[in-house]
Each structure stands twice: as structure tokens, then as C-alpha cells.
Image (tube, rainbow, N blue to C red):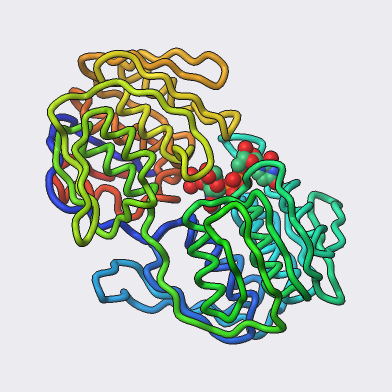
Length: 426
Ligand code: EPZ
């Protein structure tokens, strides 16, 4: 097991290259299942979750070829996917349990192959994370759904048919499954109360490049005119807005000055508004977003909600910031039922945090003190690393496999802008 050792106190200054977005790359890697032609994704981040999904695609019969870098200022990796021969329609438990996002193969697989048998993902650290909305969406498009032995079987031997998918509340993954399934359904489909996260528009833009007929992606109503087949394309994954927001917090916490290269302000407007309130001076530049400190750190309030409101995936990182801000902050987690596991670990570093139901009250302290802490989930691990950047002495973050799921080359990117951080084997 590896761990990060961070010696706090350094001011961060310089440029951080923002990688391709994990949460765009994962659904985009499922799109090749919809066509028998090879297609290439560029600017893919080098992350554990990407490898896990590649393994699943391989298992289904998709040939995945890894090329080198992209050039052209993007740092990601290119991969070519050839799903001309789908050899298997079963996504097995031992892969799905490692990454619940595997459930996004369900829609494209049943649309292309007429059947998909996917292990129920099970919950994860941050919550139960059911998939009922995914299943209702596919039923609305004509799939038969059966649950047995811990697997969900979706079947549509005569193909899917267009329909209306009405989500009672926003679900990113269910919107992505519905979008990909509808692309090949016979007739017109409408997705109502669709997720509006930028990753949805990224997926829709790729599908349109493959020949899909989609309107309204990025709004709450998406209309899809099904087509008989889709063709290959080459598509660049959007920059990771959650990674960008995480480094923006690092800039403010260390009273530094960072250029987040390739970040897109429109993707992070809500969190950047909070960061400005907390003391950041934020400006758009030609190749990214610059975040620097105005010298103060002020408490703030957050309620996590679907895009374009404040994203739940940045909640833990902003809580780290709140621990050393002047005054009190209140952070309410309204999306997941158990996404405060970073709280006891931050308290080990000397933070003053009280949780009441879905809300945490954080009273700023003059400084944190380094200690051994345990990563519990992806974004919590980033929260602990951020706290370590400002804590007195050494902070040791254990269970780095959580972090490696979603942050590419973290210690290299932080060292490049002045952090004292290294990865050691435990
Ligand atoms: C995506 O997960 C992201 N993952 C998550 O990022 C992110 O936190 C989440 O969207 C919300 O923005 C990927 O994109 C791979 P949801 P997803 O369906 O699609 C409930 C990270 O850290 N729900 O929008 O699974 C669900 O339990 C990860 O990068 C149902 O009840 O999220 C949650 O409370 C963590 N039934 C809420 O809806 C369903 O069928 C939103 O979940 C589906 C979801």
C-alpha cells in the first residue's frame, strides 16, 4: 500500500495542467459499444478507473488499443476502441464491484446487442447508490428488465423503441445510459429532467460526431431521433472540472497563485463563485483559469446540488478550505447520504467540525497539525491532501488507491508548483 507524505507550509505558484475528465471519459468509453466501426478518444486521463473500464470492455470483446500522447497541448492518452465484435454481453461482478460506473455499459449494450447482463454495482463508501432510475429509463425505451442472482438483465431482442424518460430527480449516470440507448432506438425519445452536467454535453457531442441526432444536451430536456447505426469518430475528452476545482482550492488555501491550464470557467462557475467569496481572485486567461489569493480566507456556506449549482464532488475539498478560514462555514450535502467521511480525518488534523444530519458546521482554526490520516473515498482523499498542504509538519495520507482513481499524477503536479510531497510505499 502506498501513502503520500506532505510537509505543509509551502505557497503554491505556477501552472497545473488539468487532465481529461474522469467523469466524461467513463461514459465516452462506453459509446464505442454503439458502433461496429473503430473510434478514438484523445486526452484520456491515466487513472485506475479508466483501466478498470478498459478491462471490462475487453471482457465484452472490444479491442482497446492505447496510443501515445495527443500532442496539441493536451496531456492525455489516446485510445482506439473497436467493438465490431461483441463477444459477451455480461459485465461480471468482480469488475463492476470495483467501479460502479460500469453500469453505464447497460444502455449502449442493450441498444447494440439486444441484451445486457450487468452485475448490480452495490453501494460504495458514499452511499447506497441504487440504479432504479437507470432501469426505469431503459424500460421506457422498450427494454425488458429482470433482476436475478445479483445481476440485472436488460433485453430488447427486436431493438429499443423511442419513448419519454421522465426522471423524478437528476441522475448523471441514468441520463447517460438513457442518452446512449435512445441514440439507436427506433423513433424519437425525450429525456425530461435530464442531468445538465458538462459531461452530458461532452457525451452528446461525441454521439453527434458518430451520427446521432440529439438536441438539448446540457438542458433539462433532451430530444433524440434514433438512427439505424452510428459510425466511428475521433473525440477529445473535456478537461476535468473537479480536478480544476480541487487545485483552485489548493491555490487559495496556500495563499498562492495557480494557472489551471485547459480549465473552462463555464464548467466551474458555481464553485468559483464560492471561492471568490472565500478570498480568491479568479480570472479567465487564454489557456485556462487563474486563481490567486487576496490574502484573506473567509468562511462560506454551500449546499450541494446538480449542475449548474455547487457540485457534490467538490464538497470535501471545500471543507478542507473551510477548516482554516476565518469564522464559521456551513456545508450541506444534499446529493449523497454519507459523504462526510473526511470529517473525522480532518478533525485528526485539528479541524473543528460538527455534523448535524446532512450539514457540517466548520469553525476555522488558526492552523492544522500534521498527522496520519486515512483516505476513505476519492474526493475525501483529495480533501486530506489539501489539508496537508497547510498543516504544520508532516501529514501522511494512507490508502492512496482511492486517490489514484480520480487524480492523475497528483504529487508530480503539486511538486511542480512548490509543494513538498512524496509518494512512499507503506
Ligand atoms: C456521477 O455519479 C459521478 N460519477 C459522481 O462522481 C458524482 O458525484 C455524481 O454523478 C453526482 O454528480 C461519474 O460520473 C462516473 P447520480 P452517478 O446518478 O451518476 C441517486 C466522483 O467522485 N440515484 O447523479 O452515480 C444517487 O444515489 C463520483 O467522481 C438513485 O437514487 O450519480 C445519488 O444520491 C462520485 N437512483 C443521486 O441520485 C439511481 O438510479 C445522484 O446520483 C441513480 C442515482
